[in-house]
Every structure is written in structure tokens, then in C-alpha cells.
Length: 621
Picture (spheres, rainbow, N blue to C red):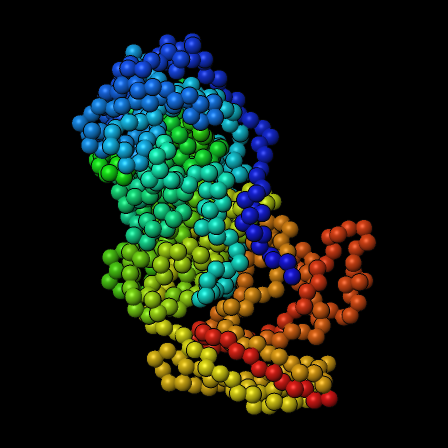
């Protein structure tokens, strides 16, 4: 049967067009701007200065000297090689977070401090010409991205909820969206894998400063985001925990700018420097943040706490001050921020139950609204909060309840289960839960854009292992009549409890006389429900409901003697012979798909079962 979730390869390969464009003012040519020095006029040995924030919010000067110009460093983009001179830069050399620092020669702007060499013994940097950055500013902006207007409208609320009772597999991934797979494909598409230790010039990687997040979240962020040009560091925070967009905040040339992917009780902020404030937008970084193209991410003014010197790559520590503007273009030569826009965010609430005495069991934060970043950072933040409140290595059984509110669609409720001997679930396990894999699949659907209005998560912990090993099966009636029942005795070994046995009756189909029937026995959480192929977003959301059978159960399954078919979102079983031939379309290939359904008998149990088995029954003639 066709899988009801499209693969992430197919999902990521589709992109929506932008039929209508917002008019943006054209930047004047470099030749007509008296405050800009074209690359053609730059000579070896010229001296000037740059602006960046060494501490606090006020930009300070550092001296520069031109080494030479590297022609056509990037496609139609030169690179101005400079040597910097400043007491802090003599120690720190090349600094992540200085990306975008404006460089001036003869009192005129040349471009942005943007590139460096890993393990460099000298403070040598590469400057992206301002002309290329102004070209990015001239690019027209669409009215919306992924269906969300840049000028936002009030969101609709929908009270109706669809609920599902899904389970997290003990053995690994569900056949669904994967944040790690998505990140890998983005890295390949943009060729942004960082070659640390190489002699090649690389962007002075954007430090992604994490605040209020666990070591596990940092590790997951590094796995996901390093290939995209970000450097996750446990070196950030936020001075305004739930800051609203501010009209008082201002960007200035050489000042700090933050791209806020998480804000609130936890934070994740990409830190860089403003190169140039124009009437129609703000230019920064001098290289891409993640090479996303047109995007819509929240930005903020920021404060620098310190320059951290490192032989590998130094970086700035900092924190957000006030949310201000939106990152709308992420290109080869720069990022472009619009101060008159406010990017959408997803409000998130996390509540943790079952850990008495935990100092914090309630978390509130916002996550940037993005197809890749939202599922990834939601999983990281939820996993981080759980580890912070209940970092236990005792036996634990948990329930993860997640309600996602969509604009224009019913709420969806996911319920993930798990019972583990290794303690509280780690960040990667939470990221691979049904809720966030399902959210990723919905975000990246190939039919229509969708907006998430809020996410509410509740985690319930019990520090005991509700698991039983399946030891074996005794067939009490090895030969039975068709239409009667076979009896089996199943032996279990519950954790920290005596072994026990349970007897189940298995109905034998009436049309199976003279046959040998094979039955498979498996945990309920591992048995997928039959689902039709999704052809619309409504069908995809519906298919996310009840993906598996009951979590705490034993499922006895055998193949049906009659066929089944799926059409769109409908699954039909026990169809008579010749049914599909009758229903087959003669003028279209979009007809029912045939499959061989399995008959499932679900036996509820008080624990999760680990293990599988099988048995055969001889049906009398």
C-alpha cells in the first residue's frame, strides 16, 4: 500500500512561486553615492577603520589596512583582504559575530567584514563589497512567504479538535518527517557544510547563542545547524524574556543585530553586525546566515557581553534587547532586514508533571515560524525543558501530550508514549516524537501553506518501568474447526515483578477450512494502521490521527483471505473478489489501489510489551 506520508525528499523538492511582488525602492548606483568607495578605487596599502561593538551596544572603531583584492571570489563578487589592528582583535583574530561590521577607507564605506580563516595566526579578514549587498536590498519582496503575508492579518481561532492516540516506537524512527533528514538536505542544497581546519576562506560563522537550554539541546543544534553555517554556542541569553516588537529600538551602522529563533524562558539568537541602515531596509553580515533566500524571521537589537578568544574561531557573547524588524532576505552577500515588518512567531507553553520539587515545571517561549526551524527548535526546546526539570537516570514511563493549533484547520492532538530504562527522554528522542515529526510533515506539505497559531505541550512522568518482555507462546489448540477459536497462552516477564501468563482466544475465519494460518504477535505501538494516500492537506492531517494501534497492548495479526483497497483517504477491507476490476477507471490512472489487509486482534495490557513472536494454526477440512 502506498505510504500516507510523502517523503521529505518529495516535500522539500516543491516550492511555491511568488506571483505578486511588493515594490521596493531601487538603490542608487555606487558611482552616485558620495559615501561609498567602489572596489575599483581600492588600492593595496590603503588604511581605514571598521565599526563593531566590542562590549555593550555602542560601536567602536578598529583600524584596517588593505592587503589586496581577490577577484571573483564568489560569483560576480570580489573579496577585499584586510588586516585589522585592535588590542582585542590582536588576541581574538577572526571573530564570529563581527560579520557585517562596516569597513571604511578614505571616510567612505567599502563593505562588510565577512570572511576569515580557521586557526589563523593573524587577524586577516575578507570584506564583502557594499555594492553586492546593495544588490540584495534591491531584490523585490513578495507579498507573502509560505502563505503568510509580511503585513500580517488577525488570526482565526478554531475550537474543534481532532484527537489521536499515537505512540512513540521503542525501536526508532516513525515513517514520517525527520528534522535531521531535512537539515541534511538543506546542507546539500546550499553546499554550506563547513570545512573546519581547511585553508579556504569561510564566512565568519554566525554564532547561534543559546540561553536557558540544556547541553543536549546544544548538541542537537550543532548536529542540525553547523552544516548550514551556524555555530551553536551555550553563550547567550535574553534581557527581555517575553519582549514584544519595539518601535523605540533602532539599528545603527556597526551595531549588533540578533535573529531570534527562540525567545522567552529559553532563547536561541543568531548574532551579527549591522553594515548599513538604508531607508528601505537594513543590511548585515556580509554573507548568508543560512542561505534561505526569501524568509520571514524575527530580529532584534542586541547587546554584546564579551569577545571570547579561541585559537579555532573566536566569537561574541551577547543577548537580545528588544524585538525589532524581520529578516526577509538571506543571500550570498548579506542578510536584509525590514524594520517596518514584524515576523510571525509560534507561542509555546510547556508543563511538566510528576517531578516533585523541580524548580521550574512551566515554560513559556516563542519559536520562529519556519518550515524547517519550527519543528527542529520546538523539539530542542521541549527536550531541553524536560531535561532541565527532570534530568533523571531512573526508570521512567512518560506521556507527551501535544496540541497544535492551526489557522483555518482543526486543532490536532498528539499523544506520545514511552517507557525507558535510561531515564528522562533526551532531546533527539523528543525531536523524533509523533508531534514534531507530524508538524514537520504538515509544514512541508506539497499542497498549501499553513500557519501554526500555538503549541501546548504537557509531559507526564512516572518513575517506574511499565515494560514486560514477551517470553513465548503456547498454542493450546493446535488444530481447530473453521469459525471456531484457537486458544493461546502468552508468557510475560514484567519488569521487577514475577512472570505471568495470559490466555487469549483467537477467532478463526469461516472461509479458512483446510488451511494453515500463520499469526504474528507484536506490541500495539509497533503496528501501523492502514491509511490511504493523502491527496490534500486535510487528508494528511486526518492521516496523522491514530497512526498505530493501542500502545499498551498485544496485537495478534494474520493476513486476510479477502482483499482491500485505498482511494484518496478511504480504506476498505474484506472486499469481494472482482471488486477492483469493477471499480477500475478506464479513462484515468487515479483509481483505487489494491493491498492485502491484515486482521488485527488487540488485547489491552497494563504495560508496554517488548518483543515479537508467531505461531501457526491448522484449520480442519
